[in-house]
Each structure stands twice: as structure tokens, then as C-alpha cells.
Picture 1 (spheres, rainbow, N blue to C red):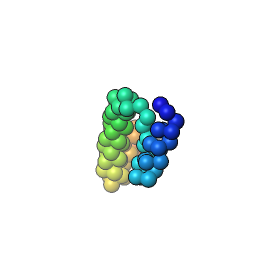
Picture 2: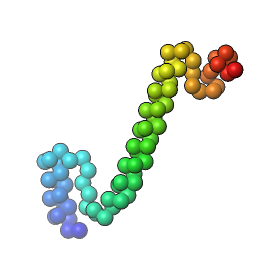
Picture 3: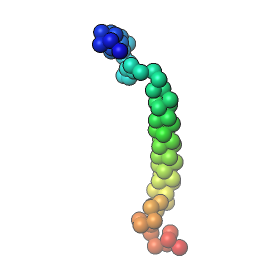
Length: 73
């Protein structure tokens, strides 16, 4: 790709508050895959935080090594 075109593309992105500048649109499949992995991680983290908050109210931990003796059963 011509360096001048890359420069113009970068300037345009900066002027329009675009964080990402892609010079190879054929990578869109990899970006989509990475996005899916990131979203899965966010969903798993949200579920963990929800479980943590529920146990925090009980004064108990969801981590087996940190559970009270009564919660270990």
C-alpha cells in the first residue's frame, strides 16, 4: 500500500476520532474472531462477578479455598 495513502487514511481516522485504522480489510475475519473471544470473556467475567456479589452478601466466598467451614459441607 502506498505510504501516502496510509498517511491520509491515518489522518482521516484521527480527524474523525477513529481509534482503529485498518490497511488490510481482508483481516476482518480475524477481527470478528477476536471480538467473539473478547465478548465471551466479558460474559464469563460478568457471570463470575454476579456470583461473587451474591456470595459476598452471604459472607461466603465462591472460591473453594476461601469458603467458610460451614459452606464446605
